[in-house]
Amino acid sequence: MPKPLVYVLDPYHPDAVTALRKNTSIDVVLNNDPRRNDWHADATALMIRSETRITPRDLAQAKKLKVIVKQGVGVDNIDLSSAKNHGVIVCNTPALNSESVAELTLTLALSIARRVSEIDRRVRRGDMVVRSQTLGQSLYQKAIGIIGMGNIGKVVAQKWIGAMDGRIVAYDPFAPPDVWTDIPHRRVQVLDELLAEADVVSLHVPLTDSTRSMIGKPQFDRMKDSAILLNCARGGVVDEVALTDALTTKKIYGAALDAMDVEPPTLEAYKHLLQNENLIMTPHIGASTIENQTRSGIAVVETLIAVLEGEDVPNRVV
Image 1 (cartoon, rainbow, N blue to C red):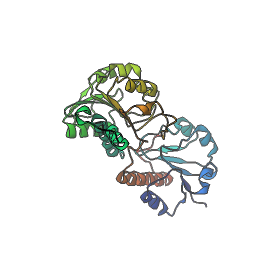
Image 2 (cartoon, rainbow, N blue to C red):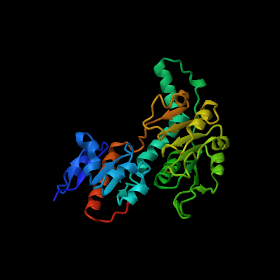
Image 3 (cartoon, rainbow, N blue to C red):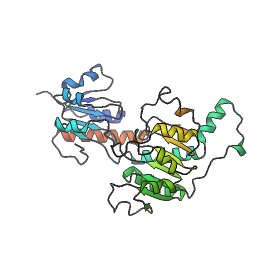
Image 4 (tube, rainbow, N blue to C red):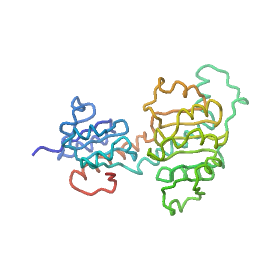
């Protein structure tokens, strides 16, 4: 009887690949194998990241496919309804990215507040930087508005309190009332209330019908002129046309995006947005630390093997 055939469609950390290859009950095709694009014909299982999209057409063609495991929490790159219709199990690795994404969130907040990237670019261009005319703003004891009270939002809140001695304003219409009982915070029921109060607005939500373009012109109009917007969640939750206008007109102080509509971001796609010095853009690197890629990659392997062996797993999405 042939072994289950596992296709690794995206690059994974070498430790995860080693763990996968140690299992003698499966055969493996890696992302750099010429057979990689033929996975529809014989794949039993897929290991993917955010770079790969799994469409209804893919799932219709993949007659032997049983399971897809996605590294990270977001699964908006997989058509879940179609997966369910075709009997394909979908799993993710929630919570494992929280520390890494929260670290980047604070990194970007401080970098915008202190104009680090802007000043670095000016130094590299040979510009004269006059310190008294290049003032940033302090985030000490400022309020962060966290939209999305899941694992990542919680770690961001903890780090904000520890690093900034700051206040937490939180918004999540779907979170149960007893979350974050161990974190001092004020939870609001209306997003506008958070936007009006927060010095930093940080998004930590999945991309759904209810979150698509949830930050647009009306929301920017309610934010402080000194506010910083951070999106380390998903592309699509911020109206990028409205963001370009808000930055260009200095309606907000600055913004940092680790998630955007076009990934990876290109100069062609973001010609106008990237003209703003008060913007930092990174290509969805929130989870990209050595430690996290090792840990979460191995978790993908362990989940995949467990499903193939018939076990129930707690991180099953479909």
